[in-house]
Amino acid sequence: MGTTAAQKKLFFNLRRMKNNLEAFEDGDLSPEHVAKIATDLGVTEDEVVSMNRRMAMGGDTSLNVPMGEDGDSQWQDLLGDEGPLQDERVAEAQERDVRHSLLNEALETLNERERHILTERRLTDDPKTLEDLSQVYDVSRERVRQIEVRAFEKLQKAMLKLAGDRRLVGA
Image (cartoon, rainbow, N blue to C red; front, top):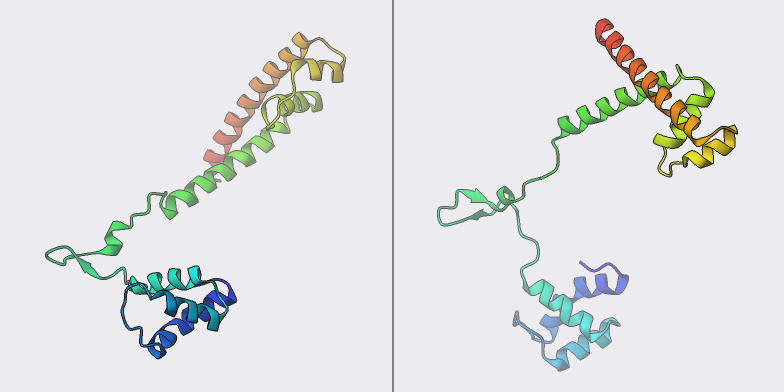
């Protein structure tokens, strides 16, 4: 089916115009017929030829049409969805939400400087360098690295504790 108004007009009027011109064949139209239809409907000759070929192919076909020699299978049997099943997507989304919640809760156990350094170094798409953060806090790059390592260890412990606590209460 066409998408522009002219293509829709062509789609809905092509058969009628072919009948009026007595061009009943399913193959290509003669150049004279193509020119006449294009002029009458205000479309290009290429559009007429293209639409005629599309319509000659038989149009839409059901996915339930039997196929094969014995006819025991259908076209739709060949259309497997390779993506994850709905229940898998839901489970992954729930797991992601739980982990995100745990991370946010565990980040609250860090002081402001640790949280900022860890976030800027590991939890952004464009991580800051040790040099950048050393200038913000007026400390050496090595000191920023040490704070990052210590904050990451604290974060891991907090997340494990929170995850264990949630399992105990069934949340």
